[in-house]
Amino acid sequence: MPISTVKIRLNKARNKLKTEALKMVEDTFGRQKSEPKVEIKSVEGYLSIHEMGYEFLRLSESAPSSPNDIYVSKSNIEQASMNLGYFIVGQARPPNGE
Image (cartoon, rainbow, N blue to C red; front, side):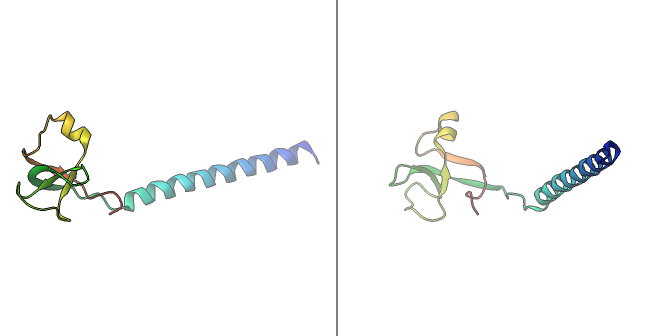
């Protein structure tokens, strides 16, 4: 096979790869743009401890556990020097996977 034919085929292959790579990038960014944004909401409640040892915000200090409890991570508690019983006002995102 002549060298010129090899060069032509190689250039066609490169162009095809470039086109496919650009399409993949456009598809990826297009999907990211169409994914719904995470809705952040304002929350408030008293910092209390769950039976399992996790900290949550509850509507009142004496309220029992409920599905409406808002999880607060240990790192957030330590970073803000929060203690149990504090009334907290802040913003929260839905749990992962929702």
